[in-house]
Image (cartoon, rainbow, N blue to C red; front, side):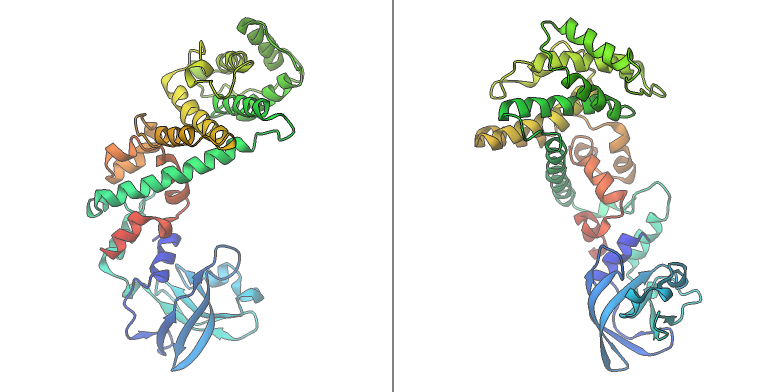
Length: 373
């Protein structure tokens, strides 16, 4: 069972709570499970328990095994002196644990009290490389899955907007600042996966020239010389790159985008004009459209108070008309998710990274549905 799933089981009281006893045999009742704490210190704050009919208020700490209390050196950390209950999954050698102040904290073994469904999920999540909900998706109605990925789409879009906004120079006039932000975001996306820093360095070095290129060929020659012909040129990583992702190819495409953007007006610029003559492959074109162009369009629409353009950008982001890279969608497909959702949803990458890979099950509507079913 993942730590996040364990936290969810505790927070939602998804276990049989009658006739609980500590490892010392003392009767225990959980009045308040507490509030999940994300920072350093105990896992749950402001909990209330009844132990031998005496009420205690304080913190709860969760571990898979009792010995983790000592492995994590909680017995030497005064911030754990207010822990009123130590909750563990496994019963092996579980006993009361010592606090830093020398007193002992009671321990509860929870696993015997969890439901059969949670037990199945715990076993599924034990397989390395598989999602915690692997093989259980057939028990989740498709609208629940769709709603989770719609939520992921919205969160991912917010993240992408913040990513491009971090590239904005606030000292520039609005139109020029937007063009430069878009341009640098394109360079960054063309550098995925091994050369993002190098592409950003190239962008900044070329920006310092304050040069207006007369032709796209001139832009290509100048950027190529900055990229590869100087002692101060960026360090490029060509290892593992396919032919269409080699640095020289990406630099040429970046130069074309630079030229296309020079005199573009944000209100009338289209994505087709932005990538004109770049000879981008379908996958990288998709990345630029979804992760760069749409967030930048939406930001410009916000700045200029254009609700129609904002709505159009959001609709295109959520349209599910472009394929998600197989490397992103495959973990969900293997786990049993509908390919019609995970293969098209722009939120698939965010869901995988922020929920599944970071053990964020306690915040996932799919997992909540599973463990309550």
